[in-house]
Length: 273
Image 1 (cartoon, rainbow, N blue to C red):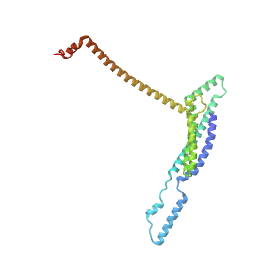
Image 2 (cartoon, helix red, strand yellow):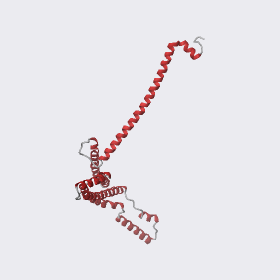
Image 3 (cartoon, rainbow, N blue to C red):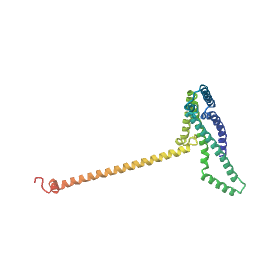
Image 4 (spheres, rainbow, N blue to C red):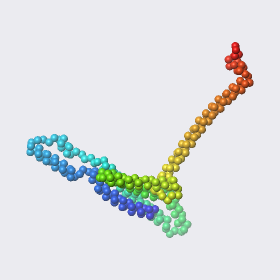
C-alpha cells in the first residue's frame, strides 16, 4: 500500500501542476477582456464629450449597449469545468494517498513492535482482520481509478480547448484520445474474458461485478420465460388431452349403443320419427 501511495503522489503532483498551468491559461476566458472594456469605456466617454460639445443627448439604450453584461462562450465554460474537475479529482487523490501512507505507517507501527511471537501474531491477525473488514484494498484500488478519471477529464477539456484554436490539431488529438480510451476499455474487460490475463485496470473489478450481474439477470429472465412457456404448453396439452378424451368417449359410446340409441338419448325419439 505504501509503495502504491508513493507512486500515486509523484504522478499526482506532476499532473496537478500541468492542469494548473492550463487552467491559468484558460480561466481568463471566463472574464471580460480588460482591453475590450477599456476600449468600450473610451468610446462611451468620447461619445459623451461629442454630445456635450454639439449639444446632443446620448440615448440610455446606447449606454446600456456599451455596459452590457459579459457572457463567456460555451466552449470556455466547458473547458474550465472539465479542467477544474480534473484538478479537484487529482488533489483529492493526493489527499487520499497521503492518508493511505499514514494508515500504512500506523499498521506497521502497531504490528511490528517487539512483543512475544504469539502476541505479535495475535496483534497482526487482529489488525489484518480489521483491514479486511473495512475494505482497505478497495480504497487502494479506488485511488488509481480516481486519478485515471482526472486524466480523461483533462483530455476531454484539451480537445475542446484546441478545437477553438485549430480544428485540424483538435481532430488529431481527438483521435489519440479516442484510441487511448478504447485501449483502456479493452484492458478493463480483458481479465473478465481471459481470467489468466495479466492486463487489468482499477475498473476491472467493477466490470467483473457488472458482467456477472448481467449474466445472472439474463439467466433469471431466461428461466422465467422458460417456466412461463412451460406452463402455457402444459395447459395447452391438458386441453388437447381433454378434447381427445371426450372424443374417444363419444366414439366408444357410439360404437357400443349405435347411432339410434345415441339419437334417442339426446332427442328423446328415433331418427325417423
